[in-house]
Image (cartoon, rainbow, N blue to C red):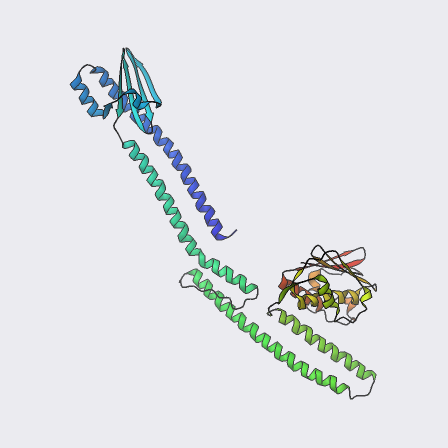
Length: 395
């Protein structure tokens, strides 16, 4: 869950809690108002009953208690909040939309009054304004906090881009706080790493070029030598050195080269993979259970599949290997003993089984496969079942 989402949840929770408190406060305020108005109107009713037939006294009472005589239909459907009987009738108090009404029944006569007092509505308005003000402050805090953390989001985004191979990723910031110092530190680190990578790649490219030139000259010079065991041994070692140079440079190129992704069939990928293998195609049992297109760099994925097939042929105990494409998985299976160590061990450069150190190879095949699949965000899975070593590329 992102920081922005967490902040949004906290603000929403705060607003919900505030509304709940406001509803609770409103209930308390309403009860307090009802009690206050009841006491006020009860006192008024007592004085009215004492001066019921004194018109001048009644006018003074109405003015003192802010009472206005009304007709019955003006308080219809009001809620009864108080009722008491006296010797010759009863006193009833009603409430409707924050307005209060007094009914005095005396013998056969009925007197109706409305309390002309807006202090109750003013208190409710104050409560509403207070709630709106608190919500406005929370929203202001929300936007201020988002502005504060937005540089962190930019730093996280650029770090993610950098980790995916965009070594030019930098964080632009104009502030002068801790986040800005973090951004500046990241920019300095990114530039240092970019410079180191560029220097390393230039060195590898130059070394690779310098190695290939003498290797080519050695190959050419060998042609002038007479055939002998020494010549054959030299040819073998020079070929191994040439292949080692190619594989090391290929691994390094994978770290920075942009992939040329396209959609192609598995059959195309398979043919591209086996085209550079010196092997009888009858040794490969190919099975295709689906025709869904694969998206990726055909050149590099063909190298990955070629390396898996080559390892299966080289280290398998049976003449035939099986290559299957099904459910977005490429499976390469061959008869043989289970690996001694976990797959992660063999994905490191220059690692091989101890029993296979006499085989031709440098332990770079699976390392190249891993780098290619990592660049495609694909996965390599291994398991041993029924005497078979099974490597699966999960697309």
